[in-house]
Image (tube, rainbow over all chains, first blue to last red; front, side):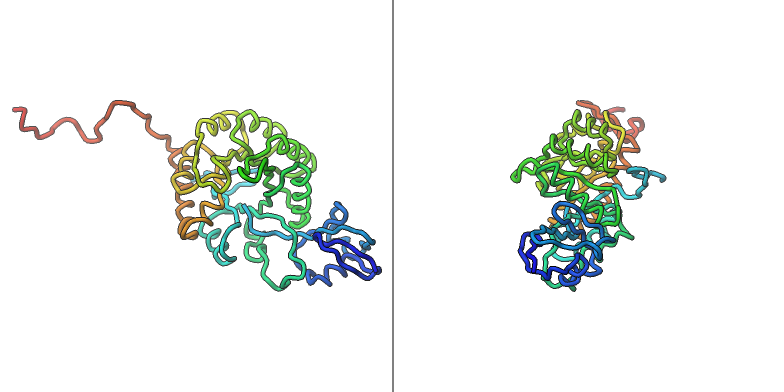
Length: 67
Length: 264
C-alpha cells in the first residue's frame, strides 16, 4: 500500500495504481478535470502511464462559478 | 453597426463580460448569462469535491466551451506563484485554451490588487504563451507597464470587487485609456445599469461584472438591464455627447414666433 494526499486528504492506495485508475476510483473518469502531482501538471494523455508513489501530493481541480 | 470588441485578435459582438459565481443554482446562472448576451464568461478553478456525488452536473456542462469563450480566473490568489499555478491547471482543464484573467489580490478585506505580484505573474504567463487579461488598480502607469509586458486587455477596477460602488474615479480610467492601445475593460465595482453605461460612455471597451447581476434581487432582469446599459453607453460614446455648457441654458424649441402677451 502507498499513502498519498489528494486535495489535502490522505488516502491509502494499492501500490500498483496509476493516475487513470485513481481517477476511475474517484468516479471522475470522463469529467473535465486537471491534475497536479507534486506541483507538476500531469497531462490527461499521460494518465494511463503515470504511476503514483508513496507520499505523492495530488491536486484535482474543476471549473466552478466565479467572477 | 460593425463595432466589434477585439481581444487578442478575436472579435466579439458583446462588450459585456460576466462572471458565473454567486448564483443560487445552475439554472439561474445559465439564464442570467444567456440573457446578458455575454460571449466571454469568467470561471474559477477549485479543488474537486472528492467523493461527493460524481453525477452532479458541472459548470462546463451548463456553460459549454463550444458556446462561450471561457475566461478562467485566479480569484483568491495572493501570490504570483499561486496565480501562475492556477492558470496552468486551467489551461490543462480547458484543452490548451490560453485566454485567461489574471488577478492577484493584496488582502482579503479589500480584495485590492497587488500590482507587484500581478506584474510578476503577467511576465511569466506571457512568456508561457498565455493571453492575459489583467485585473489591476486604476493606476495609469501600472496599466501601461502591463500592456508593455504583453497583456491583451487591461482591466482596472471601478471600485472594490463586489462593492457595487460604481465608477469612483472616471479620471483615472480616462488616463489609462489615453495611454494604452489594448482594450480597457472595467472589472469590478459596477452596481447597477447606469454604472455600466458611464463606463462605456467614458470610452471603455467593455465591462466585466458578476455581483451586480448575481447579487440583484432579480438577477435575470438585471442581466437584461446590463446588456442594454452597455450597448447604450457604447452607442452614446460613439455618437459623441454634446458639449457641457456650464451656467448657460440653450432652448430646444425655436425662439422666434412665440406668443407673448407682454409684447405688442
